[in-house]
Length: 522
Image 1: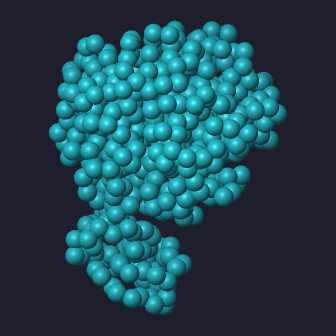
Image 2 (image 1 turned 60 degrees about the vertical axis):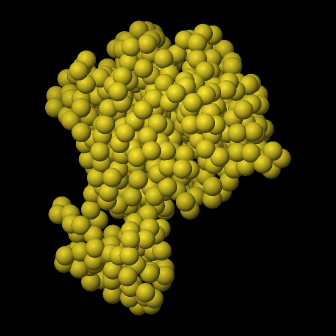
Image 3 (image 1 turned 90 degrees about the horizontal axis):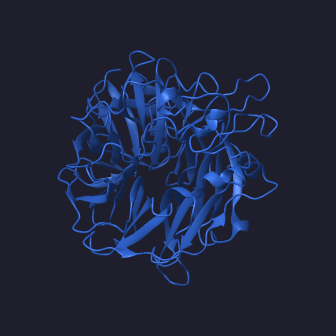
């Protein structure tokens, strides 16, 4: 499709009748232009890490990853997304692993966590001086924990400090009883309250988890519109909801359901506050075939209007065949999470397929997804990082613009099934992910205050290019802001030409060669 540069034009007050003319006369206009990105490699960084990224209120970017030689947890800082240096200090750690995360609060405080081999627990610490020094947090070290995620919520009504939430799951003990847990901090991450399970009997999400059928949580996020915290995770279950979908798996699990579990942001420390919602169900109900919808991850995000999105892979066949998967997105209103949209196809199924989606959302319907795409032979494909953007994901027929993020090959020439650790069959499948090599499963994804994408991902295909990479959007449509003709950043909403907006409050429009292609709302 031909894409052109947008030239903003101020319209002033536009009556409702102008909408109709706009939509009717612009059917031949082209879609919005592509976003543009730059990608750099972090010096002396590891290609086997699972890096994470955050942006502080002053615009500084921070990436938590591992060092190339020592494997230690290290944090990089950049004021401009181009020049990156390691912070003067490093977060608390004893024997670092690749499971790291980092978030920032409205005060600029950094909170970092690492799953440590010394006791298999989380080493969490915080910094108030841009990473120069770090102070250990209190109340969060538990045995047999795995894959932590952070999110930051509102100020606590008692302490008036930001609430911080730490999500994780239990690993080997999940064969006996399994759950997702959230530990809440009411003082900006300095101390954490005891963790609570987010699922309870006789709920179906809890029943699914008792099959030990989860590779862990996909992420946790805060929705400001509804003031709620959401946890997303996959499970593997049968159409009847039992444990017939076997073999039993731990660590890397071929999920066929995705759950979104929510609680009010100020009562997450109460286990009774959490309510489950089934977002994706590919268990094979009726004549529908069973599909894999959690190739380690199927994360969620919410936009400024409270719409919740879930990005997930969907295989062509069932376990243990992960090959040829599509990437899809579903959405629902945060006020009705029991009614989800039909899937929007981000990347079509076929060939080697696609794995490991991550998602971030801005204004209503504006979504970025990052994932790995395999090209060439399905058995020995070439894997690259790809970014996809939709400016109208809430429409009946969403449009997606996809771009490969550079030429770096991110994974060895292995099939998607091999990347997901599915190298054994039968009862040995329980050990998948332990006895087999597999892909690093977590990227970092965030956006700046104008909704420009920032993502960080590892590459471990060859020694020359191995390392942690960071991609930053430099121009083009973003998720929150756009510049008008006077150079002022304004909050906007794109509409495709075939779907004019229903509201009569347009104050800015964009002209393209051939007619108006996109309308913007202040």
